[in-house]
Length: 107
Image 1 (cartoon, rainbow, N blue to C red):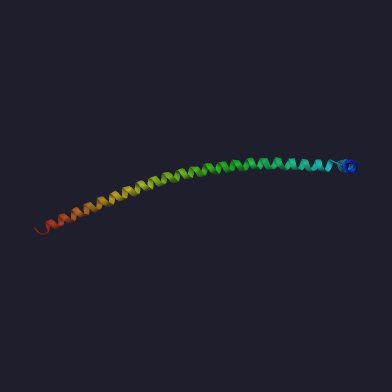
Image 2: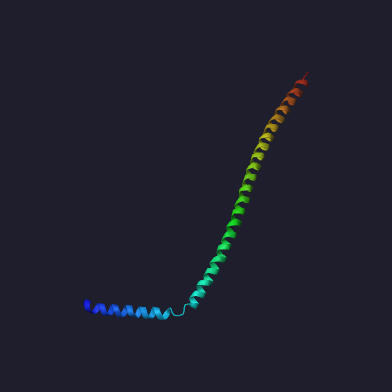
C-alpha cells in the first residue's frame, strides 16, 4: 500500500506546484489590490485618530459638565438648608408675636 501512496503524493504535489506557479504568474492585480488595501488602512487609521481625538474632547467636556453639576448641587443643597433655617426662624418669630398679642389683649 505504501508503494502506491508515494507516487500519488508526488503527483499531487507536482499538480499543486504547477497550479500554484501558473496562478502566480500575474501578480499585478493582486499587488494593486494590496496597494488599495494599504491606502484604505491609512485613511481608516487617520479617521480613527480623528475620532479618538473628538471622543477625548467630548469626554473632557462631559467631565467638566459633571463637575459643574456637582457644584450646582452643592449650592442648591446649601440654599435649601438656608431656606429651611429661615423658615424655622420666621415660624419662631410668628409664634413670639402671637404670644405677645395674646398677652396684651387680656390686660
